[in-house]
Amino acid sequence: MIKIYKPLLLVTTSLTLLLSFVYGHGKKQYLNNKQQPLTNKEFKITIDVFSTFPPEIDGCSCCFSNNAKEFKKKQYMYLNDFAQISFLKINGVLTKFMQTSYRKMNKTTTIAKAKSKNYELAIEIKTTMPSGEEASLCTGIIIITDKKGNKVVKEFYGECGC
Image (spheres, rainbow, N blue to C red):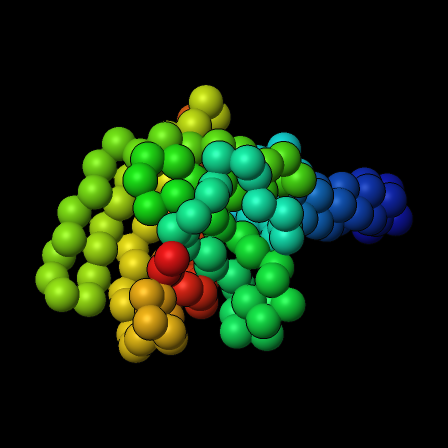
């Protein structure tokens, strides 16, 4: 009788192992996908550098770069006109923002918000020290959020002045 059931036992065991592997692998794949953030390129926001001032920026301004090295090379990630207009290069496109709020938190910290057609911008500027007669070095963070809620946070280094 063992000879009759041995092939059946072998098939049943093989099928059980196969189903366990498929189920376990599928469950693991599901858990891995569930835990990982979206990496689709269409959701990625990049802030690029540029060196040419738009015509709207004339006179006093703030010029911010990713770091001091880029700032010395005049490679900027953010410019504003000390009033209502600011620019960032987002995903390769120079994007104009209009200020929606401005608040001086204390002697050295300012928080401003601005909007463009596709993005919202929040910026916190901390004035660190004078860098000239009418200019000051600054550091801070910029937060860009798109209409789908995707965001990028960048630190900056730069200068505000005339």
